[in-house]
Amino acid sequence: MALIDKASLLMVPSTYEAGKLYNVLPSGNRAPDQTGENSGYDQTRADFDFDRGSNAAATRVNADGLIEKYRENLFTYSNDFSNSSWVKYQGGSVTSGQADKDGGTNAWKLNVVSSQSFSGLYKAISGSSVCTISVYAKAGTLDRLGIVNMSGVDFAVWFDLTNGTIGTQGGSNIDAKIEAVGTDGWYRVSFTQLLTSGDYFQLKPSDGETTPSGADGFIYIMNAQLETGMVATDYLESTSVTGKAGVLIDLPRIDYSSGAGALLLEPQRANLITQSEYFDASQWTHYSSTISSNDSTSPDGFENATRWTSTASGTFLTTSLSISDPCNLSVFVKYVDHPYIQLYSGASGGYYANFDIQNNTIGTSGYNTSNEKIESYGNGWYRISCTFANVSAGSTARIGFAQSLTEGWGGLNTSAVGDVLIYGAQLEAGSYPTSYIPNHGETGGVTRAAVLCYKMGVRDVIGQTDGTLFYDWVMNHESPNTSEDLYTLVLSDGTGNKMIGVNNYNQTIAVFIKDTTTQFFDNSYTSGADGARIKLAIGYANNDIALYINGAQIATDSSATIPTLSQIRLNTFWNGNLADSSSVKQLALFNERLTNEELETLTTL
Image (tube, rainbow, N blue to C red; front, side, top):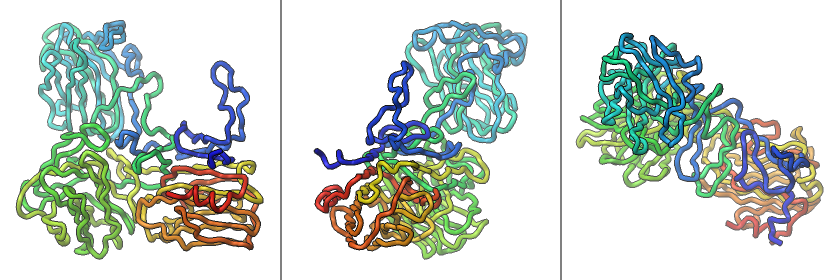
């Protein structure tokens, strides 16, 4: 028998759904399926409950190594243009059952009359964020499609459905794209803007870039999508409810940043930068540089990275830093032909850190700066970050071209001009960076809620008088701030009077057993650098306790009493507070005290 087969509970992050993380053990039936099978669902399986509230701000690194976000098609009835939410305006009409891009009959004929200036189809939208509208279209008797924000001509773009080109567009547009789909004349056209509340967007067929058209006629359309962000992503079908995909609300995040999938657990954080991907927005001020949005493929796999070009000395981007102390600034960067980037604050000369993004190297930093990091995200992309202390509201967060790895505060490039790709800026309260939180226009920041992962009423899988706890996880940060370095795992009775707990207090692993009073306690193991993997096992019975970490015996005790326990909480204290940041690879419980040799085997890296 394999050692792990003795477990009473085994969690290896792999199977999940919204609000639930399933375990491998204990075995038992799942919920009944549609045929009525599996009707004997075992409610004592000890599958973990998972809660992040009604929060869609979370991301993860998926199995392909790409940053995956929450996605939503904000259009309802995205391919039902007969629905009343799509207004057929000034003689515009639609006819269903047309040949589509996939060989079916799900396309629509959009008809207009030449005598009306705004004959077509429109839909009201609302919001104040960067959004992208897309639709599949094909020429009919007319060969132009205008997507028009009815706020004015400065918010419009015309597409040529015969030649696959973009025509005239308004100066307030962020981007427009046309992409051939298949070989039958279909294109996907998209249009990116910074919306204002109460906008109306119209699909306007024409025989040229004119309104009204010179003739009655039609084009074919299908699969419309409105989404937050800089680019059109894969189409999501919607009906009376919006289509959703990606990192859904309450979905456990299986993250592949450290290789094999691990359950990503993080505290509440907010990205306070109003536009984290649109660096040409009014919230960013440019010095001696130009910006080209949607220039290259970013770490999320879409063409929404920005090309940042230095045109003279003193190149930097800046945005306001209205935040308490400490704070962490991060941004994704990719080398093109300038290697040195400096993160710094406009507060004073002490706040800066230098990075070489060509050679993956950290340079010098100021006396109010710490926790400098450069992390690879593949394909030449790095996330650089640092923590600023003693900052004050009203100062600024800045990203600049540095001259060298040893440049002092504000020592910006004074010689060669060049290019860098940037994406995903983040400013958050705290002493270390957490996973990326996209913000496309929310003043005051976008908040990702803290993760709660727990199971109550599971006495049967927790060894009571004797047992073993095995925990395999990665510390996601190295921070001296004790308010952020607390419990990563707690077994308790729900009151805090009795527990077995593991925490990372001030970069030191501490393990304790408490039966009203703490009887076993050891805090002698240094957790090591950020990203260190910890495999910990504690075998316990009355007056017989042994702690092993990474294959070595750390401590023993021959005078402790074992508490009666009934609940499990990952990454939180017994009452659900004080979330840390970690990636859980495996958790196992045993209803027996394993031998010391078995504890050593379990924990060997």
